[in-house]
Figure 1 (cartoon, rainbow, N blue to C red):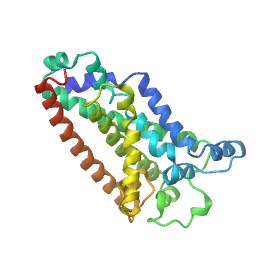
Figure 2: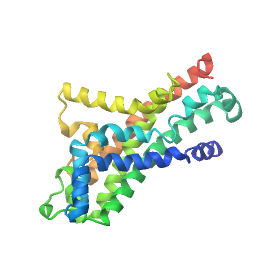
Figure 3: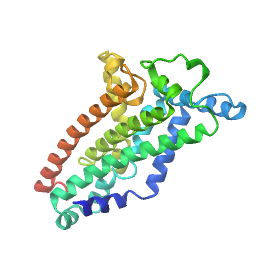
Length: 264
């Protein structure tokens, strides 16, 4: 099993990995593009602003960032289906090892690129701007956007951003992999997180789910439930639950497809 997982991880080291990380950085930056350009010119601004702005109303962070999490590996299954190589790979690696390795690597690679993009952007911004602005000196632990940790515990703040990014990444890359069970079209699989994110947001808006209990608000960093620490625990629990459900669905459908011959 470990050998299969290592081999699959090796496949994630490609041009798509670099493009995905750059795309995630671009997505967060573009939501505050004018402010970022102005800040680079006059030196005014702070790191927390750009991330909170992306969390509050960032269209690119909300809809485009999930697409980049699927780029390094989640499209691998549709590529193998197009090459009619699935049956051959399964015969060499074993059905269960292939299925579980495929899902595990897809989920982790999506989380990895989300973390890399977030951390690299944070470090680049921190070279130019302070972590938090003076107006947040009185921030309390329950403030939105994890402002308290940004002011008093910058290490906790970057850890929070990283964990939330990883949680989002594993969910969307896992979802994209599931879509490849039904289509071998590269672009459909790649853009499925975009559509999924849009549909999810619209459903929550239509049924008027309060922001404090919306998983998307928690995972993007807009909502803080009592404290950043508690919010992280809740975010991890949400992502584990969703990924487990997606994983169970993927494993079941993949086995069914291999048995019936619809996936080969």
